[in-house]
Image (spheres, rainbow, N blue to C red):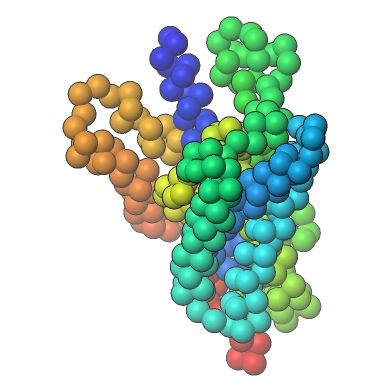
Length: 326
């Protein structure tokens, strides 16, 4: 039982960062923008939050966990917003190829994170010496009372607030896309920007807003991983392929943020299941790490064969909109 509880807890811990990235990417893709820069933006958000907390704690005699948390979140959101702004300016305003810009942004964001993360590591005394425990304690604070309940408390109430925020944002985004006027306008822009434009909807405005908000949500995934999962430390390339798993989860979730909640748990479990299978060789462990992508491919094949409109990506996904060609 103890091993099972630990496995579920760690699966959730792995899945939440992926859920943030997937929710942000779904919101972005619903506008017709295919932002493959999400992995890089997650790096940018994570290192920016860590930088803010690091300089605050080192410049204050008695740092406050709450103040450190707020500074960290603000730095994360601003840096993620910058990443999203770079993408939207190049793809929406300059109409550059979305795939190329997204991949370039991922390369840039990863380098950005490793450079600044490595720099503050040296400032702190060497690799692995960064510690913003005061700020991290605010992110890792459990729900008092409920987290002490045997089994149920360990499974449901033993996490920091970003874990619950990720689930709330996914539910809110689902409601927004399906039940609100602005959300339906956004879906219309993603399906046919020319038709939406003809109906008086400001296509560039919706694309900019959805991509920028989606980038900030994805950036919180990086902050979660650094602050809540790792406890306020940094390791170059520490995110691994979680950013790409977030992009893959969009397909598994069928462009529905609510589906991404359970999908992130599946991905989180598949990502670490090799640890709990005894006797695996290194090669077999690497094969196990392929499982999330294999599941995504299977879902993609199944949904393509069924060809249901609600299970397909937005019709204009990845395509630049030229109003002159309307």
